[in-house]
Length: 136
Image (cartoon, rainbow, N blue to C red; front, side, top):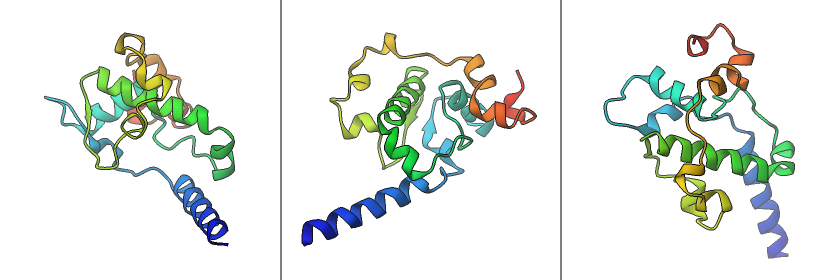
């Protein structure tokens, strides 16, 4: 009985976490020497594949596509790190949680670099084409 309660509680908590919108201030967790402007950090995030919440998925979709979202998340974090940013949130990254993930073991040379076309053609700029971040 206790196992059932724990599993149900965990499932509810997990679905609640996945259904919450991303923090509006996610950019504040990324630090890089000489980069202080919000727009510069957000541009880097978009160029590394972050969607700024424009592709919010419901909890069912996240559960079905967990591996895809995890892989995209790892590539995003590693792309930012490759560009010289460091993540400062106490929550940590997927690679800090599980260093055995395939994408975490890849040499940095195999991690995609920032790409302006990824920003301009990504989910965010497709949904908000007139946004300041979507200007070339």
